[in-house]
Length: 125
Image (cartoon, rainbow, N blue to C red; front, side):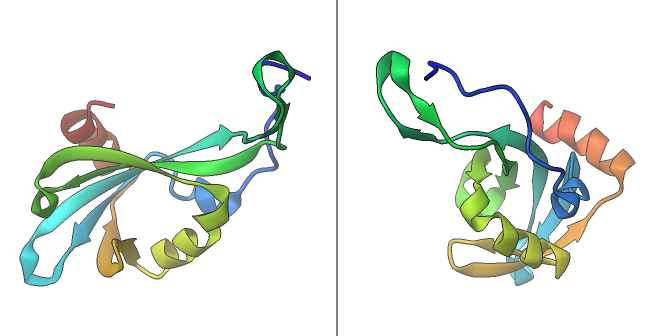
């Protein structure tokens, strides 16, 4: 058993790859607009053990999501969309929706050039 997860990566997730380093403009009706930015990452879950004899899950993809949503009163925040919820989230993104706190918002995905610029300016990435 290992203190750290094993090396390796899961098979490619083509649906998630479409959103790698992509920004989306989120619309909340007349309540304004915000931005999201997606970065896929490989993660493991500790499934047992403690200290130096930890056991780890197989590697899986998750989406690290940065958000700038002015109506929340927080300039920038982030969250992880883990494997358990990723397929449902990807289905929403494919349909032009972004779910946030039981609210369905419209999302317009931006070009790679726009995404790169917004990632630098808005999120410091």
